[in-house]
Length: 330
Image (cartoon, rainbow, N blue to C red; front, top):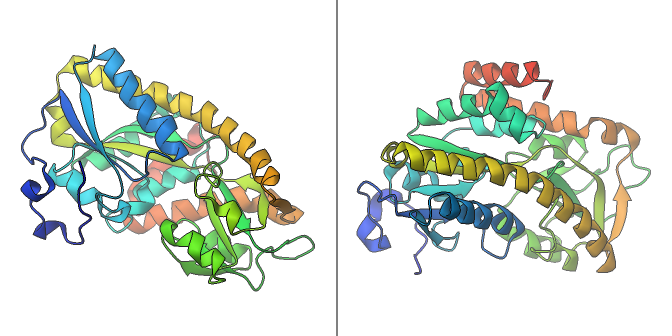
């Protein structure tokens, strides 16, 4: 089923989308993904989660899945809150206009089991429930989340991106400036053409996924090392969640927790394999200087906490203290 992208949620009825805003029927949940089915994060996370939910509910819960061609990733939070869709698989940066608290997660070292054991996961969930959203899973994109591609070798520079224009969104601005670059706000879909046409000289992306986006066709170098933490989130409408029986909730929670661990190992391996593939496709490795290598992950973490504090400093600091006590952030 195809759905049209829309700009203003208030002007689009559930009937026009072919969806219902009434209480969700647990047996068929509507899941909206910010990534298409040909992308690694979808394959590793969405497909695994859906399969596990089916297994643990004996096929009693099924999913109708739609992608970013239906509703833009930047416009998915309101359909979730209003119940037009039951679940959204996305990243907190995509709804930064609503809240930036979730962006603090990218300031925490990835360790899904420890996040759940120490209360980090629950703290994010408790906050999002105030927005009518249940956090189902926080799936890490490998041990290191980010990787830059660039059209210039950077060895020998005091700042890797001196004189360079670099694609940015809210997550990357601080890092790009630390590396000496000029941030250029662009959506992910604009990266390929912007590199191709010289609008930008470099772009960050997840450490796994550059091949999927074919950025090797328009960039000459992969900047190393990979850095930072990155997780994509599975959210559910809170009313939908509360309408499920305890057994179904437990099955979904189990499926999400297992998907988190699967994603950590699987995407770490995909990122390592992809670095080899990118070189086979003609890209070369270029490296940050020692100071940047030693500090970039800490710079990224500090930037993420700073963004989270813009929404609510008390909430962000409380979550950060929980993570700090667990030894997962500074």
